[in-house]
Image (cartoon, rainbow, N blue to C red):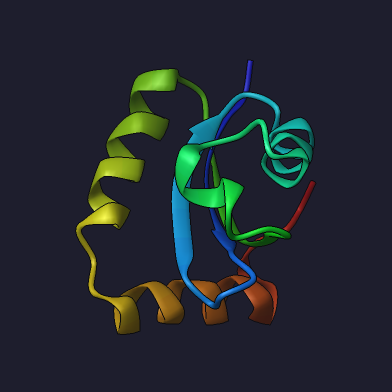
Length: 89
C-alpha cells in the first residue's frame, strides 16, 4: 500500500498538511466538508503538494516535519513539486 503526505491550499490561502492512503478521496472528503475541522470553513481546497511513502509511519513522520516548517519553506516545497518533482499520480 502507498501512503501520502500532502499539503492543500485552502480558499483563504492557508496551507493544511495531512497524510492518507487515498489521496484523491482525501481531497474530495476535504472539499465535501467531512475532512479536517481546519479545512471545513476554508473550502474549496486544492492539492498543492504530496510525497509518496511505503509505510504509514513514514508518511506520518513527514507530516510532522512539514508542519514544523515556516511558510516560505512550505512554499518552496510546493514550487519544487510544481516544477516537475511531484504530482506523478
